[in-house]
Amino acid sequence: MRRRLGRDGPEIFPLGVGTMSFSPVYGEVSEEQCHAVLDAALDLEIDHIDTANIYGMGLSEEVIGRFLERYRTKGGIPFRIATKAGNCRGRGSGNSPFDNSPEHLEAELDRSLIRLGIERVCLFYVHRRDPRFEIEEVTDTLANLVKKGKIEHIGFSEIAPSSLRRAAAINHVAAVQSEYSLQTRLPELGLVQACEQLGTALVAFSPVGRGLLTDDPPNPDRVAQSSFLSVNPRFVGRNLPRNLKASEPLREIARKIDRPAAAVAIAWLLARSPVVVPIPGTRSADHLRELAAGCVLELSNELLEQIESLMPPGWAHGPRYSESQSVGPEQYC
Image 1 (cartoon, helix red, strand yellow):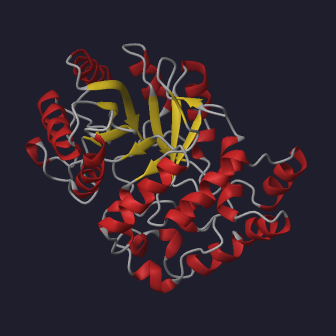
Image 2: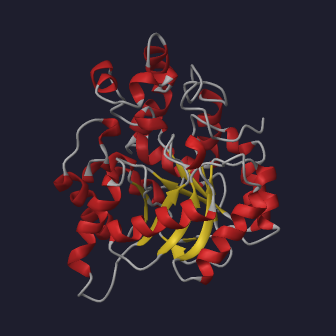
């Protein structure tokens, strides 16, 4: 059941926990809630946690670091931690929104390690590409951080298949992070295939469509409380009711087989490719259990075909990002 984090990486539970939700981006959240999610992850044997320096401007890492304090004298850290840097939105050199310079990436990594209270991370991603640096240069930077013992494996977030191949020619890329779900299927146009060929894990964020692919999808009040969703095209104006209606077939299928819709969405995604590792974010331990149920749910070919027929590529209304949110991810189709 376990999946490998890259060709040479560790075997991990097929589902990780994304922790952007440990910051207020989706609404207010308490540290107690976050720690309850991490406790539930341990109970479920989930061992991969994904964060970033920009989530709450370090808050997500600090929350995780305080959770890990109880384990430092009890035989070691129970999670494999991934973090990211390079997305600085004006805080980088030359006032660029992104900074992939060696100095910036290492300095931000050092700050992340302090916040997390650990000596190295399992996986370190470049969060967004900086056009001032060729990807071969950036890959060399990451490889040097491996040599220094600060990271174990390297990754990139939101890059094109062509960029992945260029990077992999310099050093093996353990993981590429990209949004991938029944709602957002762009990775199937080249990225999934490149990851399979190169032995790279495709770490899928927002695997339940930021809540649309669940039994309790966002309503206007919850959208208004989220700094991200309140400006995201799929959740504002007329698109929200359209997408609630368009995603209803998944909930109907889930009810027929007596499973949570989120579990069905995760099972569908895991069935797409053995390199896919979903990292849903949640502030609820109960919801994490629903998501993890998808890891042991085998969908029949008939059911997969039914899902595909009712929710074919392109069913969602509106682009996945607003104009400002789309700055940084590489466009390849």
